[in-house]
Length: 98
Image (cartoon, rainbow, N blue to C red; front, side, top):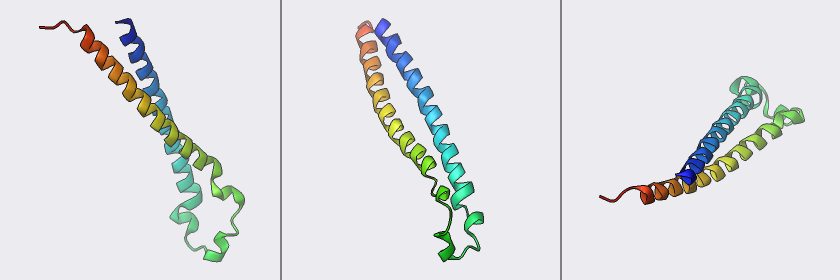
């Protein structure tokens, strides 16, 4: 029972981190959309002037957040699946056979 509680605690922690990563990614993508690539920003701008935009419009930090969040989510989902499988196996072992 003790290992099951530890695995469940790890899963809760992973889900909280997962939720934080999703919020971070949402904020980064929203920032990119509203400030860099929205229709309002680019409408009426001749194509030749787009290349004259300042370097900060590349949104490098925001894209790094998006890439980090995707990678972290993938790793956390795999860990959560492994922990869930361990909890499931542990519960099966502890169930009294009828």
